[in-house]
Image (cartoon, rainbow over the protein chains, first blue to last red):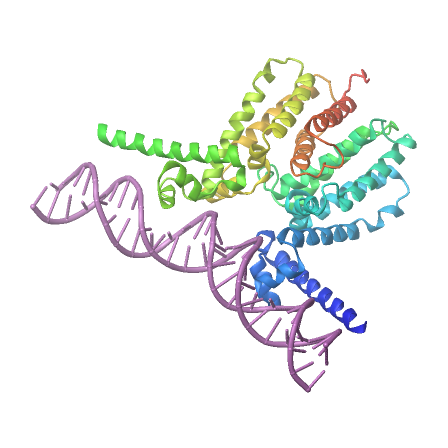
Length: 212
Length: 212
DNA sequence: AAATATACTTAACACCGTTAAGTATCCAAA
DNA sequence: TTTGGATACTTAACGGTGTTAAGTATATTT
């Protein structure tokens, strides 16, 4: 069955070519300029060919969104070398903010746009958002560890994780959707103020009494 | 000049008719189904006529976004009857969340979509986001009052306001963009968990020592 | 009555996602 | 080796989008 195998490989190659082209458009011209027609132009096929490899545009965007999570993982790679969970928690927030501000297009796809979630729901009504759940899981772990070691004030783990994620997501999403333009000017000042907010927040949470 | 006056009034009437039609489409079919052509159909003019009264679609969406802020003000109307600033702060967050979850389309327009901000920038590069700044201003006032009365731990007012806003915005925006679908199921549970997070957060901030 | 300004429309441009139907090309069985 | 069916891809079209240029009536002013 060497021939069927080769065909399968060819199929995967074209799938990859489509995703590469989408990625190129996405990086160079932003999300709203990724169109089926432009992708087709780039890989030199007709627009309809794209539909032989992907169900619809949402599925392509879902795949890009997954690449985004991979990219984010690169940012947070060294997080688990940090033994102190409170320090790790802080760094986690910083990395999240940094990733969001440095990759607004990916951030959009991962946490703001509906398209990838619509793809997920179309696949299966009960299908999980694996990437997102995984990331939230790591946040919960670290929070739990902080509580176990009496480093932060105790509370409902779900509510706490949700609150913490919401806080950094709120910062990043308001920033990249231009709601902070008058509050702060420029990315540098944005990072500074966000980090300040994060630090202050974690400091308040600190149960050790070592408040500065 | 009674004639010029009447003409001016007529012009305003059509502007209003366009906004009313936009509003109707917006409420009934959601943001993404507001199109110039549908608006024109509804007011029984040709699509191009719309452009005689509004520069572009962004300007229409900007106007709807302003209506959103008015609607939000209705939610928060009784806020200033609350004398205790910490209680008011809590209620402020609750109302914000409630408004967002009950009016996701408006929330989108006000705090997520780029269109209204693009209109703002097109009008004037240094033009302020009046509605947003006003709302943030009220949050800051209340926070400052809390600090002045030693009700919460002191900190940088800008960082604190930003953090607080980001937290509730993060909750609402993650919820309406379906990132909480596996964390919580349904609006009711969402509100419960968000309120829990908010309460816990403010409780941590509490400087009185009356922690529950 | 003629000239001008106002209000509005028609037609078009350049896009978009998506689908139905048609055409080559390749592979396997007769 | 020829035939028939699967495979891979394209053409053409549908119905939509925002937006603009050019044209046409109507109303006002000179």
